[in-house]
Image (cartoon, rainbow, N blue to C red; front, side):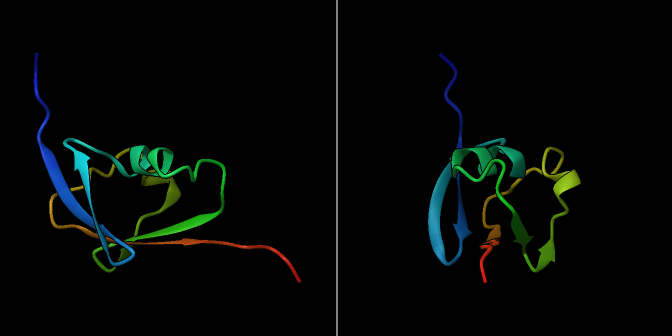
Length: 72
């Protein structure tokens, strides 16, 4: 049995453990944000939605995730 390594990243100020390798798209799915209007900032830079599947997260990354809420 192959054991995957775990990495620690910080999401909105909270440390979380995820397997390596792990992409932004996989994170979005894991957190239940698929189909929602969100913005993700990784280490101070916005990750465009078109790059979510290509950007791999690394141990120590700091992410801020903002969910757009509609209303008036």
